[in-house]
Image (cartoon, rainbow, N blue to C red; front, side, top):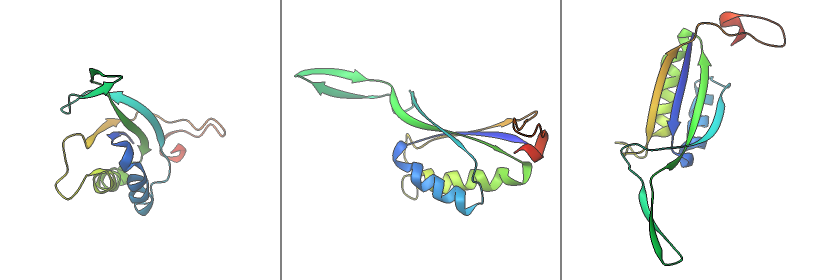
Amino acid sequence: MKLIIAIIQPSRLEAVKEELSKAEVFRLTVSDVQGLGRQRGHTEVYRGHEYEVNLIRKVKLEIGVNEEFVGPTIEAILRGGRSGPEGEIGDGKIFVLPLDDVVRIRTGERGPEAI
């Protein structure tokens, strides 16, 4: 079992969800987050004063999957999350972590059956 965490552009969320659905991955958690990476923020003007915004709004997806779904899930996120065929700085990152155990609260099931 693996926990896949993806940080993507908010505008790409629907495309990623569509690609995940095609890959038969239907369970995910979505959070609004802010972060700083290679984009390094940008400058905005508010009431005539210029200021730097260095935390960029992103969306964080958390998906627990069994081993056979790791590759298809990553590929789906890549297809849906890229801006254009080559991608751009700021498209995001995917992290894959080991998942020791999962417990379904309703039934008490554990492990791969609980996902």
